[in-house]
Length: 114
Image (cartoon, rainbow, N blue to C red; front, side):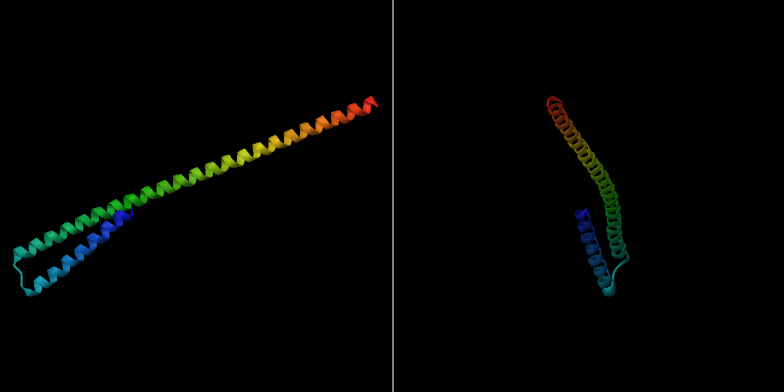
């Protein structure tokens, strides 16, 4: 995208220079054929600039789609991390409960033996 924008800036600068040159030539006198050649040359710049702007717009759209996809992926990753944390916490709670049951069973068995 940056390269496309640089190319556009370069084209616009060259077009501006050509227009300035045409103004100088017109002041000094110019034939109809020369004038037609200059206008043809300037039209080529305009067409090239228009094409470049279309490419830039397409690149903007592509960047936006990629940005949206990235946001989706980040949300999915965050959701998976949350689920992973919840599952781990459930596991820790389950292990702690089993430990409590084991301790209770041990205490209860000691009380019965005495």
